[in-house]
Length: 327
Image (tube, rainbow, N blue to C red; front, top):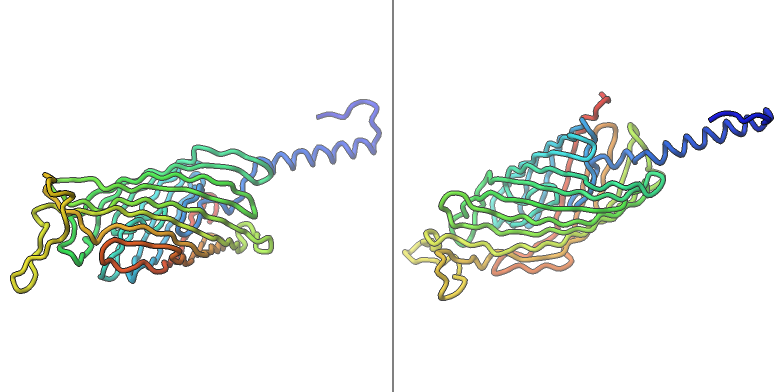
């Protein structure tokens, strides 16, 4: 930019002011809200990923159906739009363990999972607002055997996970929707098969203007999360389809798919179900620490067989972020 001939000193001042305004607007258009850097909801799907070179460690306590889980997770931002994470939740107590994914980012059973997130779509729609979409791919293996009331534990199998999320993000409000499917494969000669599961979610977020603070000041975000899940039927291999009970009697662990079914396994009637859960969660960040918690309540649930009904679910997590360039 240059000053055309014939402009007065007053016009020159206006011209310099205009240049500063234009440059400031260009900076705003290229900026993204700092709070979106991998700060997502507790239960549902989001599109956020860690920045390049940033990492985070998290410890979470989760509770559902009378069973408590403790989980550790490590995440690393390979690039601005590509994140890698490893998590390993495990059960702290015994009982009738619910099956199915607990949250979008961690398994609902004792498994070690490696998960990659690729934010393949990123489009600015205004000042600090954007639309984006993220794809998730993961693999996991069992670390604990879950007890069952209908026989011995099922042989643990590897699981494969694929999910996607899309949403609109601004500095004050945002909306995320997503879904993921987890499928169990086979290894060795075992014919046991754990329940596949489908998890969907819709998340509404609100960042109050009064609490809208950037690093390193405290920042607060509120969420209303709604999840819908479907869990399939499990089956047991024929060699362990029956289990002896005291007195010499035999208990049949399940039923065959059909009278003419030639597969040597039985379907477990006390497995599978579906439901919808909804409730509030909150995330507070201060400097390099994030504290997240919330509860979702059952709106509608239905489980198969004699499984106990699903009650409310809670999540409490503490994260520490190693942000590149910051102590």
